Amino acid sequence: MATQLSQAAQSQSCIRQAIRWPSSNENLSLGQAYHAFNVEEKTPIPLQVWLLESSKSPMVLPGRCDRFTRQCFHILLNRSTTLNDHAFVQGFIMGSDPRTTKLHILLFKQAAQSLYPKAYRFSDKSLNAFSTGFRYGREPRFRNFYRLQFEDSQHLTLAYLRRHLEITVN
Image (cartoon, rainbow, N blue to C red; front, side):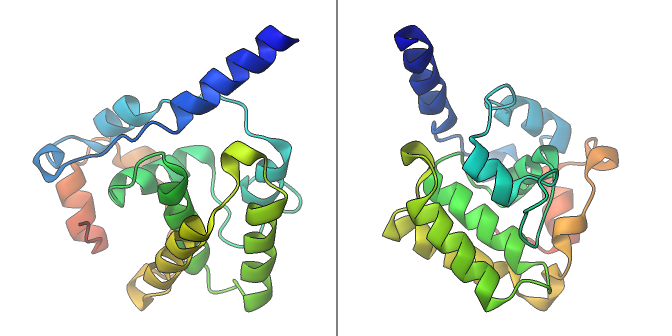
């Protein structure tokens, strides 16, 4: 049991590695970037996180999308796998769904700050990142972005997709 906990802690540590896509990598295709980025595919998602964020959960909040789509958003928004960047992406996804209400935001923030496992729990800085991502996702050009399907776009470059989708990155 102790060995399993140690392995789980090491896996969670790997999840939090910062992977950035500098502008010089904009010529990568989405598929190439996804395969390089995809460090957490086999990492199980804790139940509390799964319940609120997984598209397969019966309790998921607005902005539901599958893991592949979420990781594509990480890449296109130039966000790593750190907790703050995850918070930004989650905020962006929820912000792009016009069904998201103040109550949904309150419920998500409360759960992310108190119910999520320690490695996934949002700090005040993470909550600020979530709010920033939410405001960005609320821009009219991103309405319903959570519904985008990237399976047929894997051959397109990051530069093309960002330009076409009007995504600006720092």
